[in-house]
Length: 272
Ligand code: ADP
Image (cartoon, rainbow, N blue to C red):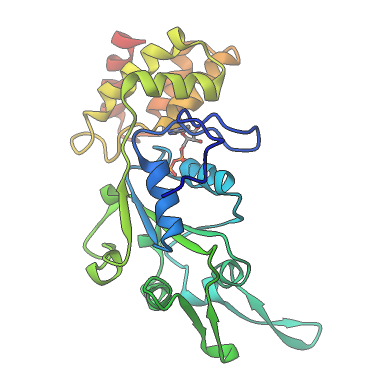
């Protein structure tokens, strides 16, 4: 199959309008193939490990509009498809972001899909099989997704509870890519590029992140994200003392327990 992304190097440092993304493996090629084969894509992995950046990067590389929806526990099917709204005395149909994406084409990215209400699955099912349709009962329309349309969803398996699991009948409609934090050297390069802090000063922050990630499931619900390491590095680059930056960006956001926090500060002292 002929690649359509010749202009883009493996490093992800492409044209200036393409958001920077450092790939961990073959996910860019996989994304492109899924898009060309009209397959929906599921990205799973911990928070702040690059899923959203990856989607933004690929949308720009493929020259597609990106419609992003951050799902939350109140998000219903109508929030995605649309509803009649009162406008100057009239009721006017207003497309939701999913309907807009199906009409206009491009990538529709539903971030943290398991957070959304259960009725969302009903609208996603006919869109994620070979019918690729979005039935709109309220307007008596049945929209066919154009060639360029692709549905991408993400979720964090770490947050899953029994109530918030993705049902097999839904997840088995997607090609899936597992994300995780990058290996140290790559994470150092990403954090340095994102924050402007030189790589040798980023190194201890990434070492600390690795130490703290081991505590996930014991003292911590979630390991420290690359996003937080970027924040810490950015604060240091802006002039804050490393210990203060680490406390504010890599320890306080992780826990409210005084004992756990004190233990994390001790770990940080030994590393940074
Ligand atoms: P997620 O969607 O997984 O919660 P994001 O995509 O928002 O996480 O990533 C958080 C931040 O981490 C990004 O804004 C970026 O600064 C950085 N980041 C993480 N992984 C990468 C990567 N592979 N390439 C470039 N930046 C990354």
